[in-house]
Length: 237
Length: 308
Image (cartoon, rainbow over all chains, first blue to last red; front, side, top):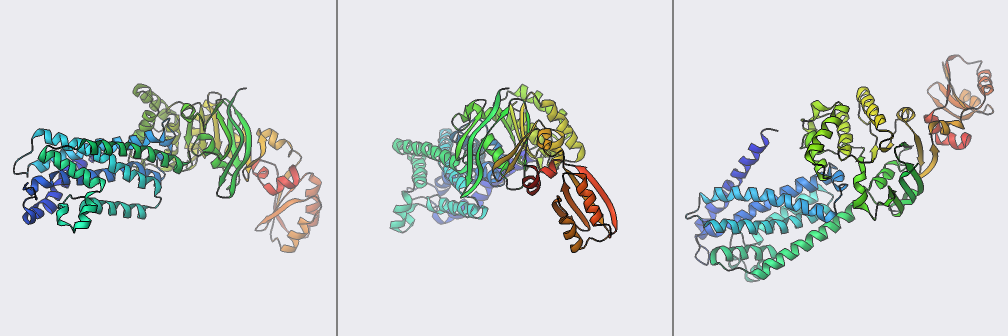
């Protein structure tokens, strides 16, 4: 019990290091700079942060919702507390946003050590705010699967597929211009891809697409409500 | 006395199968009610429907006069539910599990601490509070589950097999505590241990195929069986012919055999003597005569045949 916080903190430090070694250090030798001439270490920084946010969100929702539901551990007593199902979903999301934020803050601190020039302090805040929103959306996707899936094997298959899509299909590692033209256009219009490209626009060009952010927030709120409905149906409460 | 729980024509289906069939009854405030019945009789489902774990397809459940389905958020805090299987979070300590649920119900920290320690004392589980759930035996965890269900001080406590997995000492401690709550909280529980039900009851509901077949106090339920006795004779060797011969003795009810013993029911002692007469040529090892208990009442075949 006493070792748990220390182990978690060690993992928080080791995870960005591993990603830096296995992705950034390799890819920067191939791509060097983005098409907009931004050094690759800087260009991929927000992407690595979103990978960490995704991994953290996956594990939080698995731990707090899917595991407890499938193994019939404390989930049912929780649902008997006086809250609506949408409030429950919101609770899971807030928990994962808070924990993911801690992961992301530690990761940003660790990865900054390897940057040629650190970002301005405001950039870290912007990344953090985008991470909140990103976790809000990705968390909702995972919650949907956690509610509708009853088999662990299928659930893990979905999670792995989703992780691969996030890693290779949202422009985290390379720009969409490197993909075959049609595939690049399709992938760049995925909500998560648009989200990441919006984040990069803000960080590197100080351009912000408020409409897209508004749409993302509205989608996340609506999805939370839909998840609440799905949970209510699933539990028959 | 005022009803704490009222069911009106409550029906529950799973697929095409009827689990609860138009149940209508009320449970008085502060009473201790046991639900017994065979496997698949619908006992656990009845508890789930009353506690809000699952909605019924038909009818209404009223908790303190309010419809549970329509006014769920208003009434759900009045209920504490203990499921049959251990459902505590294995990655937390027992205390963290209880604390978490207390906070979910909005219990303030000071009250939560005081109540948790008091209840843990009552259940004799203070030394286990700081232990991880995965390292604690199921019997202790079951006491922890009752503690957790009581942490928000509900008016109604609903328990599915409250003493499952418990050793004799834990069983005594738990019932000692639950009986002290009698009159203060409405308690409804399911048990397969009929001796437990015989010891601690106000009222017993017997469920069969989703319907209540018997309802009343133990004395009332057994009242109609006072004339009946159960008889058992152990032979050195009980052949099929002998068993058949004894089974055919007039007024022998529901004969059955286990090894070399014959077991049957009879209204008059004359029946017993008639059986003894018929068996005089065989060597008998043991004889016993008992008044009927809940176990006999639960013998559905006999109940249909001889009592009601």
